[in-house]
Length: 129
Image (cartoon, rainbow, N blue to C red; front, side, top):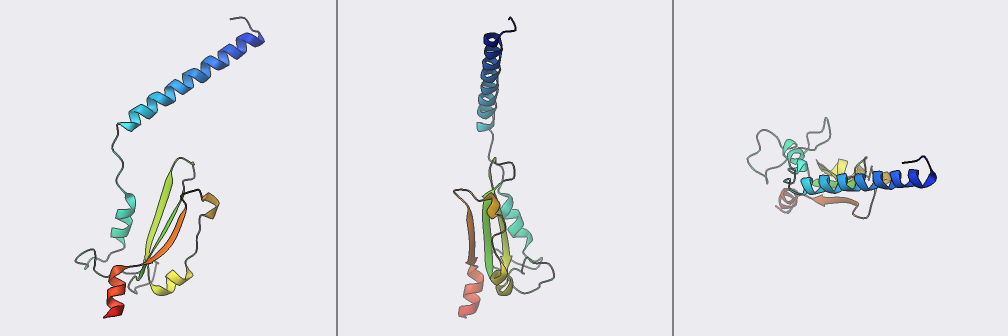
């Protein structure tokens, strides 16, 4: 191809078309893959003590140096740094630390952004007893 404006535009169009084809092929390949396991389940499990017998057993506060039982779960869902997906951060916190909790990733908020503090079922049952 001659080095003309028309030739350069044709080369650029061809490169864009090849890039779109590569992206489509990659997307089809990824569509066949299984979803990765929910990493947040592991984080929540890590906040449980070694002596806990089950999911309803009392968990300690997630904050370092705090040994009070967790009363709330804090969830924040925000856009990943790369912009290619959502990240969920969860932590089980005691009453005092839950009161102090605020959104930390508002700069990466998007349409499905979530910041929620919910009481744990075991804490509600303990308070009612």
